[in-house]
Image 1: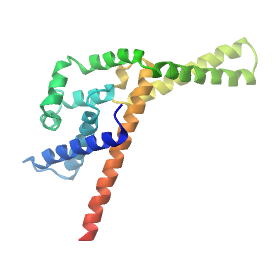
Image 2: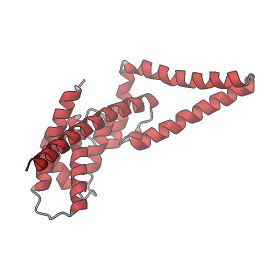
Image 3: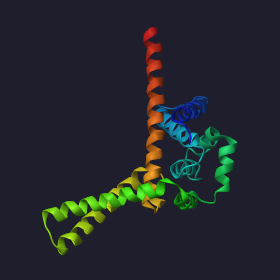
Image 4: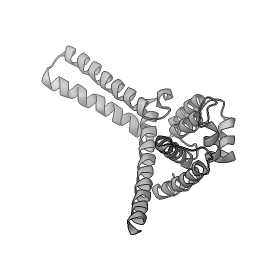
Length: 204
């Protein structure tokens, strides 16, 4: 698995490349357009740093390179020919998400994640059974636990890029964790960049 430090280095390299391409554009940008360009290049850099190994990274790249996307040409320049070639080989990013979800079934963390989900449901059921005994309480506990899992799963799917196409709860948890690690790497690099830039400004 890619280490956290190497992920940050890869992100920084890709982000600098993206910023240089955005900066060399002949189009004059206002403040909001510059902000959007920085965010766009940062998201693409984060996705390409994972080298299309995750569903969320493929979803970001595929969405950025869709024909109707106004930043399509910019995305293709930032990604370079290698990443574009990988995306051309995939007929649909929705299909690639589904394929990645299927491949997760052979991973070692699958059993552990299933146990976590089962334990959460069991804990809710036990808590309700302690409050009120009886068969009706068991049915209610099952129903409440199921609703809680469905609600949280729906929320996760809305937060993770491409999450709405991941059907397996366990795969969704893995994708979420990986996405959070990438976001943390992005924040760390951007915070360091901001600190360095502020230091240069104050030093003048």
